Image 1 (tube, rainbow, N blue to C red):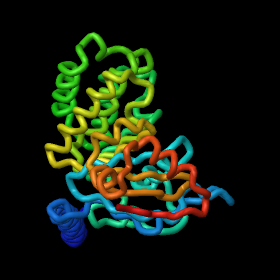
Image 2: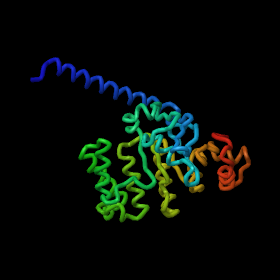
Image 3: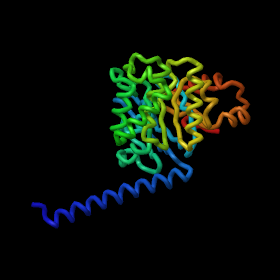
Image 4: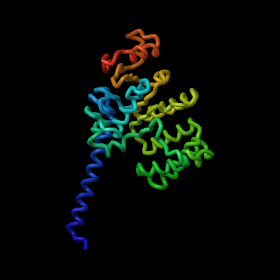
Length: 282
């Protein structure tokens, strides 16, 4: 038999949990309204003796689109995995909307969307089944998931909706992966090499979608090794051998430093010795 005491105790626990959740939401709203969405302090990740990310520092303002540039193996994916809580830092801290990623991961997951380079979708599931699966993970109700699947069908055509995602053309698969990452309408979005393996036309189309998200007030960190895509971003961060070589606006780079070619500047940054400058900016 359930006692009045246990009912009272459970009610108090439920009330406290609700208060904590609401407090987190209010803090996030406050942080979105302020300038900082992402902050990284001395973030480091080692795999044995190999230092994949080496004491990096940067911040990203709310509503900003930042292109995260670097050659393969530079540390881009490792950094994003630490920012999304998929990988624990060896040292240093990362904050999302003021929340420490390590200490507040359950709350942070409500505020971020993540599209990984290779494993965003389950290849044997259809596009619709992937949306149903990920919609359930982020807590959407059945009716909302059904509406989302109908919304996706209008974007990619119903012909693709019931095909296994491994059989979809790369550009369509990319559309489904982005759609899945945005199901819960997160204010911060991490895109890891989202345009890899698609045509130049599809890449331009994808960056138009990114611009639309920016117009909605979203904050985006987009990793890429395609230098021409940097032109679409508000700022760029160049990482090489686990260290940040440059961060800043392209306009100031061209004007103040008289750089005539991003390609040449990028080559200069990634050809510096390993003990070169870290976190330089203009």
